[in-house]
Image (cartoon, rainbow, N blue to C red):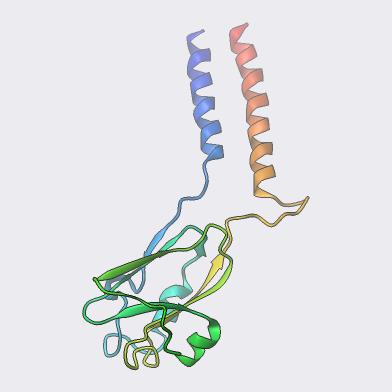
Length: 164
């Protein structure tokens, strides 16, 4: 009987682990350099920084700066042209932006201070949605439900063996 209780506890923990979702990540934009301008960075620095990262809905981008800096969430055209926009986040030493859970596709950020954007202080990222594509053949929720069903059936069978 004692082994059955221990096994049941182990299986309960395993089932709960299957139900857990992906944890959101906080990225400090530019890592130790932060959100900065020339001469601290070169054009393309933030493209290189973002290149090896996978951004997902729910992740947070933390823009950290020293001195007079800001960050603006912009369209692709405004990003490409370094268009000075009115909607900017400024003041303090940092700003955090959490991507919506259903975010998917490109997001663009620039600095609107002087010619900082033209000198490389801009960031383009591609966000992958946490929401699975609805398809009868591939759905994370149906896979999780299927795995959970198998665990329940297996644990029921094992419990029956140990209880007899």
